[in-house]
Image (cartoon, rainbow, N blue to C red; front, side):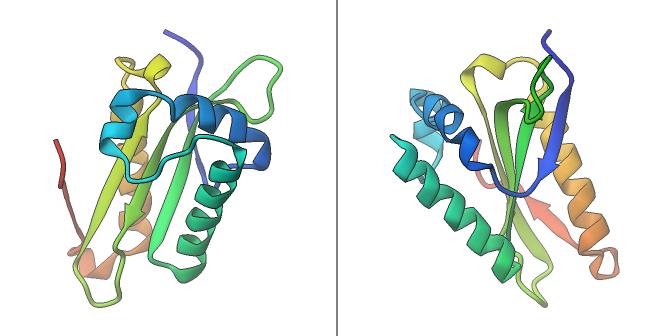
Length: 136
């Protein structure tokens, strides 16, 4: 079943660009994502976009990493994001992707559970924050 999966807040380190490029080659992933990451330069652009979202306070991405023996960072197995966070707006959107090698192991549900827990803790909005599913 693989290693223990952990969700780490924030953006990916530059050392993760090769893994990001590798998982981004998956045709199923490309069908559902809006950003293409073909090389390290694309990876850098993608990470900068994630950083801008955190700085603006309207888009919060979480790397989903699986602990690996001898690795501090872990293996990239997915990404979960809370976006369209707007003051006074009672709804936000979540999205996630799972690397092909990690599908079927419950990575996405665990990542979304962690993300929504974080969202409700961070943005309580009197208990009325709603997260809608917008894609299959």
